[in-house]
Amino acid sequence: MLVINARLSEKSQQGYQKVAKLTHIIMRSITVLASHNKTDAERFIELGLEASKSHVTGSIKFDITPSDEQLAKVLNLKKLYNSNEDNNDERFVWVAGSTHPVEHELVLSAHQELLKKQPNALLIIAPRHPEQFDKVGELLTQSPLSFSRRSQNNYNNEQVLLADTLGELQCLYGAANVSFIGGSLIRRGGHNPLESAAFSVGVITGPHTYNFDHVYPELIKLKGAVMVDNNDELAKQLITFSQNTKACQTLGIKAVQCVAKNQGAIQKTLTIINQYLEPKP
Image (cartoon, rainbow, N blue to C red):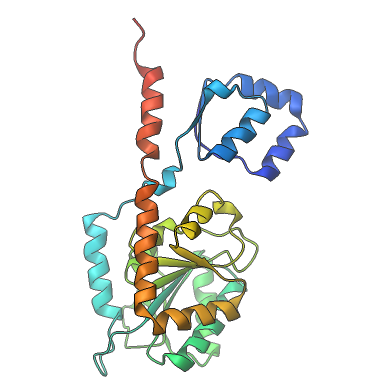
């Protein structure tokens, strides 16, 4: 049995320890295990995996590269949304991706604060689940913010674009100056920041990132992401980046450098797998 792209949180390890005898049997049945990082590998070993069967290959999630088709779409999106037709000024654009209930409101509040300093700013909000599209639309209708829906393709310099389409989030990230990754201002554990980082767009995240604790520490350490504790701090960070484009660009450069630095997990994993697929003499 080969286990690839393996992760094991401290909480999960504690759960497996409650059925230690069964867990030990499972660990002993593993032929080889390819883990995200050294910490997770050590947790598997503590549960009974033989150390010689453990390999640290990194996370496959880092092996993300925008396609030519995606890059072309990003250019078109920038033409649509990154300039104001009224005065031809470039807009500060930020994407709030994969947002959840309660978080929608926090994001809209942060954008209203940003608009006080940058009246030209655009928020592209992409709810995590399609059933939230109309609910966010209702929130926007009840707010003082002007908005349009991506699905209706009738954008006219509104303050908010509701991304109520599927399969476009990565490219929308690519069209932004900076991104906020949802599920992190509330206790949902966050979502994948590398979808933004791969497009050289830096990341802002809330404090709840446990679903990606194998990604965020590296991204923050290499200065491709910043963490905020609440929507007030989110607004302040957005204002800072909108007023300092060089700092915003540097965040994006550091983000894509982090992705490049950690790539290679797929090839390392394939090398391990091939050792067991090749016919023995």
